Amino acid sequence: MVSEFSTLPNMAKSNVSKLWKQIQSPDFNPARDSQLVEQVKQAAITSTAPTKVSFGTSGWRGEIGSEFTLRNIQVVAKAILQIYKKADSATFEALGVSSFEELQTKGLVVGHDNRLLGKEFCEVVADQFIKAGIKVYYGGEMPTPEFSAAIESLGAACSVNITPSHNPSHYNGIKFNPADGGPAGPEITDKITANANALMEKHDWEELGPINWEIIDPIKIYKSFSEKQGTIKYGRISALLSKESIDLVCDHVHGSTRGRPAAMLNNPQCLTSLRTETDPLFGGIAPEPSSKNLEGVKQFLNASKSRFRLGAILDPDGDRIRFYDGSREIDMNSFGAIAFHYMVTWRKEEGVLAKSVATSNFANIIAAKLGIPVMETPVGFKNFRPWLKRNANPKALIAFEESDGITGLNNTLEKDAMFGLLIALEIMAVTGKNLGEYLDLLYAEYGRLYPERSGFEVEKSMVGDPLLAKVAEIAKSAQPGAKISIGKKSKVVRELLTIDGVKIIFNDDSWMLIRPSGTEPKVRIYAECRDSEEKEDMFTAAKDLFFK
Image 1: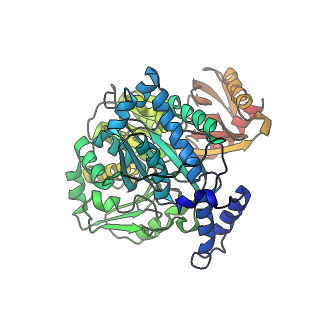
Image 2: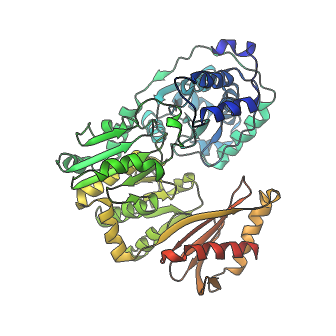
């Protein structure tokens, strides 16, 4: 199939996009319309059209068949190799190896989620590394945290993960992790972007050679890694799962986490797994851990009469998770606070809290009363690396962000849905409470905050530096001690953070974050307040500050 690459005609990008619109329409019938999917696959295999590459906070993403093609993946693989071949000492330090020869010896881990042509894309990447004399490990279908565990357990130099995370089915993507297993920082991804775009126009397809990779068992590796790290207390979980009065349900949305809870927990009778069938189109939905997609979990647990109930939805590459406990939804703003409080008060662990600037301040309030430092970072999980590395001092007890990502003490440097599920079960086992019951105790002790998101569009001409500058101007009128009108109230600014947009924290613990999009003509507003009726006033005040 790949050998015929140069003889088959290109399909225009617009035509591929039209095919995807038909595939994602309500009228699409997988049995009747499978030829549409085959046309997209052929476009991805045969296209020689270049595209623009941009590695962001979670890698590069593109439309399958028009942007994300075998040819363009080959370009990105070459771009990654160029970094190692031309690296200076600072770049090698960021990569976690000392030389190209060390990369050759330690090797690359490759794998994919369950989207179209995952293995074929991996073969293209592996071919470039094998031709450069580099050992390659192949794990097949793998969630994102398993790449981190595999790098550390195998002593590999890096990984290439073919996934666009929770994006819709017409996207695929690449995540690159260096030797510490965490997401690559801009000192690496900026170079991948530059190299790829420099190569993109002039690259001619190279036929693949023998793919002599070593096949690994990523589930076995991850389980062994997790047990070795000692963060999760499996004995306590086993005691909980052996009880008759518990129901555990996990919705995998046809993603790569399927089979993982069963393997990690020794296939307990209380476990029910939803949407585990192979379906690269995800049943026509956006496969994110949203409230809407939790409906199957909710229906199952609402009918349960068990004392303990836990439901979870995991995204296709296993780096995001959201919970339901039979009575309420528990998003990461709440669960991150629960997990942090548990680690400090029940486990008596020592360390810090790491969270992104857009995440709820509920955990900050808890940390302040417990005397625990908070490391608040720009948005992007890679920013937690200083407190997650093996030699970190202090270490993060919990690191989380509002977009459903979490990890913890001595775990992977990537956000990890399985870690979230396991620590939730441990919390239930140790405290004897469902998550909602634990959350109610925290509300009673620390009060409650109501987080919400909004935003608005601006002129396209503002994208980039003009929008960054406009948002930065807000800080001048929001210095500590300044008064800002919020509806009929006047609030005093207690603290101002400008690490990622402008975050204004008031004396009553309410706050607003005004953050520009780096790629779109949009301004995002995050707000949180003690009074749920106050959220709209917060959004209005944020817009007024922007347009002032």
